[in-house]
Length: 438
Image (cartoon, rainbow, N blue to C red; front, side):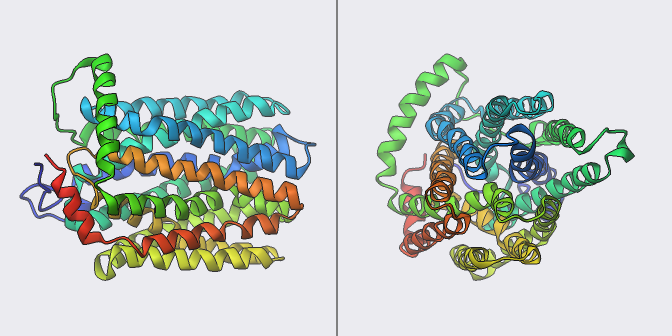
């Protein structure tokens, strides 16, 4: 049975933020958050409406964007558990992370080549990029136990999200400046600047992925059997994991809760700009609001790591869910652009915190010798939730003609998730996981 390290470096006792392995692991969040911020939350929904699908009715473009997000998430849903099992069989988490990251990087750079009006090609590249982004995160999350002691899970997990907000925000700020003042960078217009920003995201993602690949350990747990052998063993392991999950009742209960409330989080992240545009807000103002979220999210994610250690990880998640419910009610009735800025601050305060604490809470409920395999299920449920959320918003918008009602519907997911989370017994979950280790 594998034991947890007593410090971020075995036997050293130095602060986790001075450990090269922790920094290298967290820098991957710095790397791929550029895609989450500049592409997923910012420029793609904006550019899709105003450039690639110009002239298409607002409700239709919202449905197309929601459907693209749902399709990408559905692919991850299907692949995630098997990929996790295969990666653990061959101690290949870093290899699979590299494969998916490269797919996301190449597809993101390819958006530069898509011409105006080519909405289908834009959506196709976007779907592949999201699959690469989401797939790589399965293996990134699974490397957390390799760099953090059990007592520091909350802080290290939150540190990763904090660096993600900062790194994504820094590049996003540069890209926004480039779109506002394209002439300063020798670009013809805003459209050219947005297209160049996709290339910059791809380069940023590739560059800052290198430390994780070089310095984060991945101890071999079994002799490598080759890809074919690992695939067969992965299928066998997946069947065993599904049967064992029935014994991990607290982990299963948490996964159901996570499935619901993270749906609300992901939907707000992916559809916020689209929602603001539907209300008639200025596009530049919406981009500024996203920047606010990024830079507020940096210290807030670190703060949530401390809150989780002091008051309990689950209590921190409850706090974030409560804030999200207030955000949704406020968004439902807002009519002025300055309110969107305040919402951006509120989202930044809790977005990284709820994601980081959910990840560290789950680590405590699963066997420690097969993290990628169990994080496959974690990401599967998270992405399956994202299949429903964007579709829900799009369907309600088309059916009622009201983007406000589509936003309000998301509150149901947070409430249901919180009610299930109340039923999770963390200590019982730890005991159940320990019985299956080895």
